[in-house]
Length: 576
Image 1 (cartoon, helix red, strand yellow):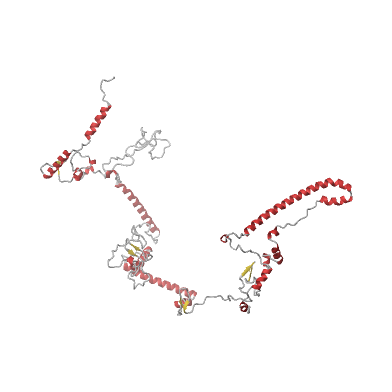
Image 2 (image 1 turned 90 degrees about the vertical axis):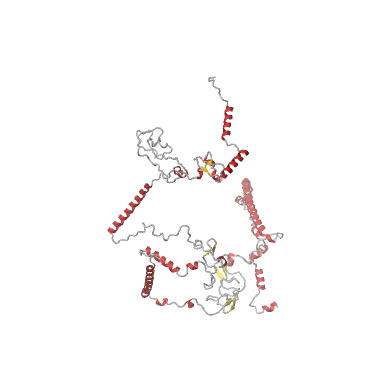
């Protein structure tokens, strides 16, 4: 062991620490202690025991409540005191007008780099990462000579809450003098420019619109107000309880708007009633009746006159403004009448200015006409409907429709007989001229259509006899002439026959493929057209039960026989 001194064990150190903490903590009062404190308090109130003394030696009134006499826990009082209830001394409130220097310290110039200073500019008050100067090409750390000023460090040792959060701390009011001097220089420059302008041109007009910022102060609305008349807040008017409430004048929710906050109703709740019978016509009625309109026009005239250089104000000089307005209106009327007479004298047309009375212009008469709810005339004569100058709905030459009711291929005709000849005689429904070019139907085609179905007609393929090869044709006369030549030509015949058979087979295969493809297409078309009887009527397509095709001659003849003729005088006898 290097030293003979005894070391204290760790457990003993921890035990002693716990004992010290226990001594520092306030002990819990026993019942006896509470009883003694209560008796002492009662004796002090009775006056038999001396009063408690604070740290300054002053007596504490025993009748002061406990919530006033007890100091808060954060005050750190050692004994009974009332110091926390007394006003604080001025030296402890802090100095709000205390000014600390700001900016660069120009009293001292640094020419050499110091250890721990900013490597960029050389100031000791900040580091390189906090430097606000531009990055130097040659940093102050490596430069031979530098010229730099240190900044003033702000002392943040605030005494109290207000001093710590003072926005104008270290502000010098003398700095505001610089702004005033700057504005004075601008005003002086403006005066010199005006003087030079008047010197060069004495008749020039100089307006102070740009410089006078307070010119339209009276015209600006107060902040917080709105232009909308329905929402603008006015003087709060308390209703007399005997009067009817405004919102009870008309219970229709779509009537005039009632603002419950301001208790105001701007519009008229009953606009259908005349003004003489209406008890309440809205608050806007007061604004736009009487002399208010004249006042508004006078104010507008004052603003316009002031804008054109006339120095007049509605409130300051009302009589002058009224005389100016009357004179202006008279001159305006004289100018209008003079221009009107000058134009009439120059161009003429005075007779057109003499307008007839409005009763004649609007074609009002004394004829009384009364209508029902459905629009029919009950009393009086109904106005005749406006018709064209041409005759309408006139059927001529046995026609049941007018000319122009049918149109086809760029031509007009009659719809009843489909005739394109104007003023022709109606012979009933028949095929018009030129109609067969676009819709080909004839007796032969109709007969053929009845005999054969379109699928059979389409799939009829003309039987073409197989073409005989040229070698066969040439070899036939030669075989009849001599048998010797046949023997020579036999191998050639066999070769040509084989080739022709192959060609025929290829042609037949192609035709069969074409027929099969056509047959399939026809089947699909017929399947779409044919609808099975078992199919539900609700799923049937529109007009699917009718076959759309041109009528035959027999059908046309039967229709002509059965067609009723309205012009037949014996028709009513036949019906009987």
